[in-house]
Image (cartoon, rainbow, N blue to C red; front, side, top):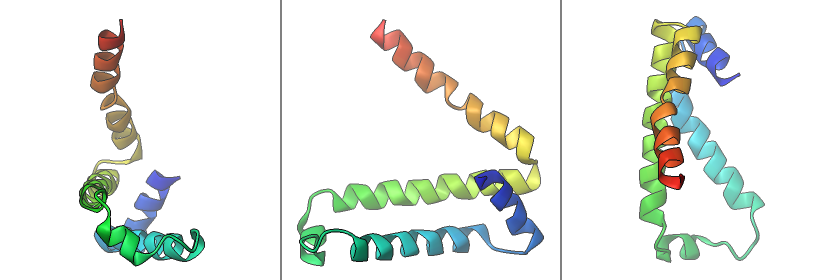
Amino acid sequence: ILIIIFKMFEKYNINILQALIFNYMTAGICSYFFLEPDFSLEYIFSSGWLFHAIIIGVLFIIVFVFYGFGTQKVGISITTVANKMSLIIPVFNEYKTCS
């Protein structure tokens, strides 16, 4: 469904980067309001995982921007095949390590 949505972004002239950043901000705000009350901003900023979470969030945005760009420029099928093939090396490496 995500690939089809990225293809629709091109049809409706929606900037992928802006849509992804808005999505992350919305998810962050919703998680703040719907989590348990003891999960405060003080806890978030004093934790050791905040820096790592920011790095992972930035990397996710970069990957999704490339994914959306590929969907719009090359097409849905080629982008999906390339995405699935990108898992071959890590999975094979993990399989080789476990054996």
